[in-house]
Image 1 (cartoon, rainbow, N blue to C red):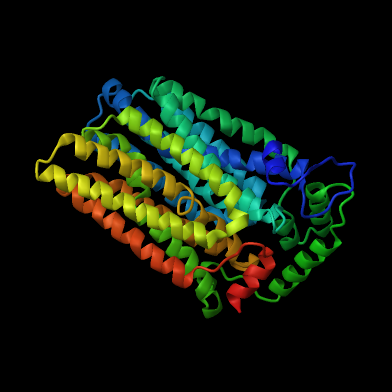
Image 2 (image 1 turned 120 degrees about the horizontal axis):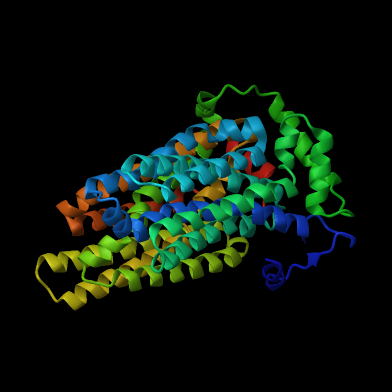
Length: 463
C-alpha cells in the first residue's frame, strides 16, 4: 500500500517527521488495511458458492433446490446483519462491530468446513452472511471516518478493490482446491482482522459522538502523525457533534424526516439499482450462465475475476481525481451494455443460431459487466452511503440502506434461477433496462462528494 501512495504522488510519512493532516501516515495505512480485511471476507463469501457448487452437491448429495437454499442463505444472514449493523456500530464502536463480524465469520467457515449434511452447511452460510452483512456497513464507514477528505475516495474504494480481490482469489483458488479447503482458507482474513484491530485506533468521530474527547484527540493524532497539527480537524468534528447533540436520536423512524429525504433517496436508490442490476445473478451463477451458452465456465470465471480486479485498481486511482459521479455513470452504462449483449446471445440461442456466436457474446457480456460494474456500481454506493448521512442518524439510516441492499440481494439470488429457466434472454434484457434507469437516476439525483469533508457533505444533504 506504501507503493500505492507513492504512485499517487503522496509521500508516506515517518512518525518522527513533521506531518500534515491530509497526508498518508503509517497508522492510516495500517488502519485501512486491517479494516478492509472484512471486505476480503465479503468477496470471499459472496463468490464461494460458484466454485464450490459441483463439489458440495456431489459429496453431500444435495439437490439443486437444496443448493439454491444454501446459496441464498448468505443473503438471509446479510439481512439479519444489516438490521442491526448501525445499532451495533453505534453501541460498541466501529472496531467492536468488526470484531463481531470476525467471530461470526470464523464460526461460519468452520461449520461449512466440517459439514456432513445440509443443515450444518446452511447454518455456516447463515452465520457467514450475518458477519458480511454487518461488515458491508461498518468497514466503509470506519475507513471514511478515519481518512482525510482529499484521500477518502481512494481509501474507501480500497473496500471495492479488496472485495474484488476476495472474489477473484476465490474463483481462481476454487478451480484447483476442493470446497472444504476453500472454506478453511476463508478463516485466515477473519483471524488477521481479529488480531489487527487491537493495533489500530477507534474512529475519532465515533469517540466524539459518545463524549470521549480525549480519546478522540489521541486517535486523531495517531492517524495523522505524532507531529501533525490536528487542532482544526478536531474543532470541526467537535463543533459538528455539538450541533448534532442538540437533535435527539429517535431511531430508524427519525430518518424519515423531510430534511433527510435527499440523503435517503440517494442512499436507497443506489442500493436498489446496484442489486436489481443483476450483481448477484452474475456473481452467484456465473458458471451456470456460461455453461448454458456453451462457453467455458472456468475460462470465463477466471477472465472475469482478473478484469474485475483490474477495474477496481483503476477505480482506486480515479476516484479522487474524477469523482464518484463520472465513475458511476460510466459503470451503469457499461453494465447496461453487458446485459443487452447477454440477452441478445440467449435470444439468438432461442432461434438456434450459431453456438460460437452465442458463447462469444455471453463471454464478452460477462467480462464487460465484471469490469464496468466493479469500477463504479459495485462499490461506490457503499462509499456514498458512508459519506452522506449525519452522525445522529448514521446508525439507523445505515441499517436501513444496508437492509434494502441485502433484501435486493436475496431477491435476485433466490429468483434468478427461476427467471433464467423461464426466459434466459428476458432476464438479462431486464437487468439491462434497470442499469439504463440507473444512469438517469445518477445523472439527476446523485451529488458529487469528492474533496469535501464529511461534515460539509452531511450539512449540504440536510440543508
